Length: 162
Image (tube, rainbow, N blue to C red; front, side, top):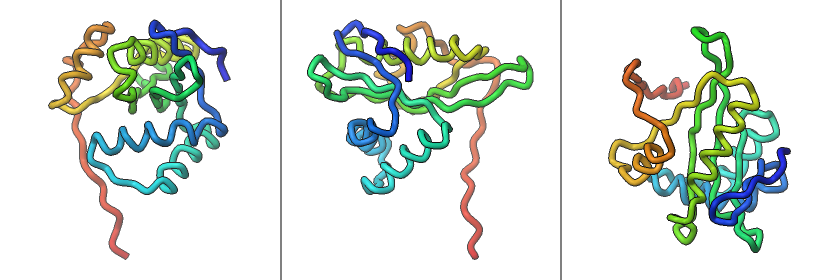
């Protein structure tokens, strides 16, 4: 785990490990609820635990001065064939309503960017809902810009009915 990093809000940002799952879980559930995805605590806990155990994602958790988890971000690695280097997808970012407008989101973004640099990544990407103007303002104020070089397509894959 990386050393804690101070956030503008006096929060600390640390890389989450297995012992942090229960602290991150309520934030993850709130994130899922924002996107209208209902999962049981057991499903969400298993998902987060597997990502950490198999090193399939990196989760950073923001904690307030009392040690309570107040935000998180989850990054997934992938690779750029064009750059021949790693890249990171910032897939999830959530800050508890009581901690918003305190710099926690910016601190999580900065820690994610530092992680990308530390791992030799060529870039980071993220997506957010078109309707989520609040998040878009946060990202743009942090120096992120909308992608104009590539069009992103998506297709839902349904399991085979067997």
